[in-house]
Image (tube, rainbow, N blue to C red; front, side):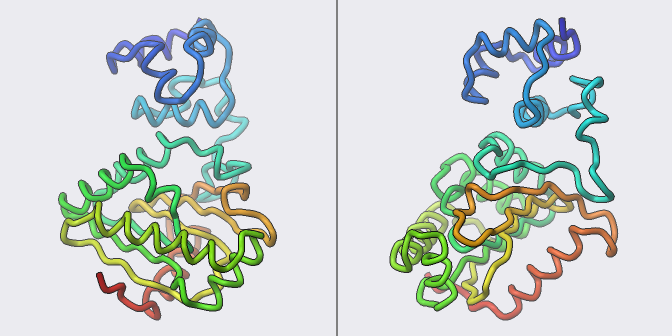
Length: 242
């Protein structure tokens, strides 16, 4: 019996059906978790985000197995598709100062209306939002499309689709979109000091590549390297005219 989880659900006024819907699992699976079965890590992280609590408070016995891997590294997902929508939404919702997105298209976010609403809401609240997408006419984008096996035209079309979705959904001040012509080794998704880094691998779609959850603690930590990379690309990118 997991009383910690039961108490947290009660405090949040959520039931098994609510959790099942949020995580896209069967309600019977949630019942098993309440009865003591330990969820997979990605489900534990998603539930902790849903309840706005720490995973260690819900499953204290499992924490040593996946706690901070090294300084500044909180977790590693084997594939981007394992990072549930609730995690992405919670990630951006918590931002109070800065949101940065660096990718070729980030279409998976642009197609999620809830995420677009969160970005617009955060910008309205005063959060600075910077979105860096690939220039659809650049040779770097064409090469990435070829590398992934979808072709240059498809990759360019994905970016144009994402740009349309971002432009129409995010009208708040404090949002700036730029286009880059850079060979990306990672896609970056920042919310203040929290950073989700989607690595790129040759011949592999980004959705199938790993994601690291980093925390920016100081200028020597791993997150600092990626934030410096973002700022350098931002400085050379061109503003996107609507």
